[in-house]
Structures are given as C-alpha cells and as structure tokens.
Amino acid sequence: MTARPPFVLDVSRLVSRIGTGPLTGIDRVEAEWLGHLQGKPHLLLCRVRRGQALLPPAAGPAILRWISGDMTGLPSRAGWRDRLARRNTAPARAEAALRRMATTVAPASGRGIEAAARASLTDDAVYLNVGHSNLSRDLLANLADLRPAVMIHDTIPLDHPEFTRQGQSERFRNRLIAALSLSSTIIAISEATADRIALWRGRLAVTARPKIVTAHIGTRLSAADPAAVPPEIDLQHPLFVTLGTIEPRKNHTLLLEVWDRLSESLPAGQVPRLLIVGRRGWENRQVFERLDRLPAGGPITELSGLGDAAVAAILERSHALLMPSLAEGFGLPLTEAAGRGIAILCTDLPSTRELLGDYPTYLPADSPAKWVEQVTALAAQGPLRKTPLASRSWERHFRQIEQAVMPEHDEKQDLVVEGGNSTGI
Image 1 (cartoon, rainbow, N blue to C red):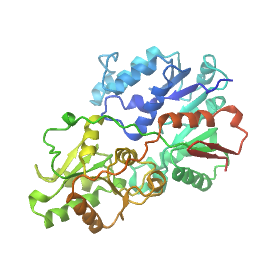
Image 2: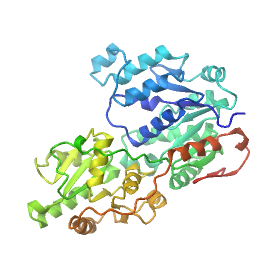
Image 3: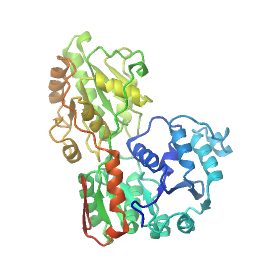
Image 4: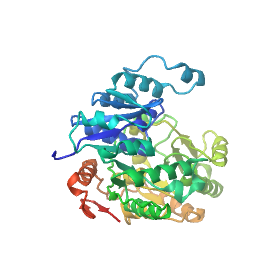
C-alpha cells in the first residue's frame, strides 16, 4: 500500500477555461491539484466531446502551460462547429490535442475508464473531482472501484437559487445527489459548507453515508507588480477594491449606493476610488447598466482580465477590501487580503467567521450608511496595515485529503485530520 494514493484527477473544468482569462477560485483549486501531482503517480480524466479521455501524466504540464496563456502545442485551428459559433476556440483545440495524447477515450458514461486506470495505477487509486464539473451519475457509478472523492465548494445554488443562472439550481441538485450517493468521500472547503452538505443530504433524502471531510484550501500570495496595473489607475489616491465575479450574491448594488452617497457628500477630489475587479457574470442586468453609465474619470472603475501581479499591487495599495457578499462558501479574496494585512470590510457570514475570526470589520449587507461611515473613516487615514493572518498551506490541504481517502480509513466513522474534520454522519 502506498503512503499516498495515486489519483485520477478530473481536469474537465480547467480545460474548459483555457483562453478565457484569469482563473476563478474553483479553477485555481483544480490547477493547484494538477501542479501538486506533477512527479507523482497519477492519471488525468477530461470530458471531451461525446466522451471521456484518460490522459497520461505528460498531459499535465501542457494543461498548466495553456491555462497560463502559453498556447504552445495547441492545434492552430478548431473544428468547424466552434469556428462557426465564433466562440473561444482554445478549449476545443485543447480537447483535440488531449485526444491525441489520451491512453483511452471512452463513452461519456466513462465505461472502461476504471479498468484502464487500474492497469496503470495501484489498487488504492482514487478518482478526484474538485471542479464541480463532469459530475454525472453514470460516470461516478462506472468509477465506483476508484472510490470517488468529490469536492463541494458550496451549496449556494440550493441555498439561494435566486443568485444563480436559470436552470443552475436543478443541475447542481442532480450533481450533489450523484456525488452524495456514489462517492466514498465528500470534501468541503469549510466547516460551514460541510454543515450545509449534511443538511441538504437530509433534505434530498440521500441514504448513502460517504465521509464528509473538511479541508480548507490554501492561499497563495502572488508577488505584486505595480507596473502591471493599468496606467489610468492612480495608486496614490485613496482607493478601495472589491474582487470577484460581478454576480448578484456579491452585492455590488450596495457598493454602488455607498459611492453615490460619498459623491453627494464630498468634494469631487476627495471621493475615494472604488475599483471593481472581476469579470461580468449573470442575472445582474441592473448592475451592468449602472456600470455602463459610469462617467470616464469618475471615482468608480470596473476592471477585468487583470493578472495576479496587478491584483496584488492594487490590494497592497488599497485602504481596504470590500466584500458585502450575501453568500460565500470560502472567499479566496478575503484570505488573500488578510494574508497581506489589508483591512477588510465584509458581511458576517459563517464561512468568513470560520476563516478570519475577528480580523475583518463586519457590516450589515443592507445598510449603506454603515458602509459609508467605515469607508469615510478609512479613507481619511493612510492605508491601514494590520498584522497579517498566517496563510493556510496548500501542502496541508493536500495532506489532509491524501490521508482522508486512504483505504484504511474507510471503516472509521470519525477521522480527525489536521486543520479540518471528517464525519460519517
């Protein structure tokens, strides 16, 4: 028996994100796992058109290169369907390249993948899915002997269907039922999420009892590069930043109202800057219309497509990170800001309390006046630097999962792992 099990890592989400811009939080988790497995026994699984491709370890460096923006090794042209649709063709070209590298291409149900994986890996191999993608009942059933371990980042589509795209809540419900019914291990990235998973298992009447393991994801602090910041951004003027996809649950409406009030009460030259950093999401038409009407040179700037070095530079110069979210499963921007000693104004959510304790200043999600008060006070002084919170280690996260999925733990109802927990409830 190996000290750590070999994994069959699902990279379907990561491949679908090639060429689409900066990685989201879930993307980063999949990328961290892919990087971690380099040099260790493993295989990769990727959903391709009408099938599943089992990939050798050599595919990993290529995928990591492509998601970094280096498209070396991709076919020069995509298929006619993708060209006709005028969509981003990089994922389709990556699929074509990966098909050529695949050791096995199976039907979408994954029939035959398990046997092919077992021919290359030891008997304790585990199928690992950390990306909320490629989670079908048929696939998980056909990979049962690989003891699937599935990461659930949050249950927001069920907790708050009003914050999701049409049909997403039902799709997530089906994926969660499949994961709970057919996985050996469910991985939550916060204890708050683990509690919600257990709650929904009861509500969905799932009788299976996989282990539910809490393993906080790591935080990697990128080096700041002020030269990477767009030249129109004045880093010397008091500024605040909010990070993340512009979607309903992030509550950008509150921040726009706060800055309307600041603009009404302060001379134009004294209004602090608000940088809204993130791509536009979905179901947020009113916010998008307000952003489209922002005057050039005004106090609010929308920025998308920034690299990690530019985001780090903006964070380090900011007076505070503002996160008035209505729901979160983890919140990587929060842990990144806390790791740099940046002040944080945010809503009081269970996952935030769990991760950051009393570090942030907690404010109501529906009280612009209190946010105006805090922003005004912070803007009046230089950027406040707090004692940074120690960043959680990715290595500890990997070790927790490797320990939790080992076969000798399968019969235990309670497993304590460093920095997290596991329960068979």
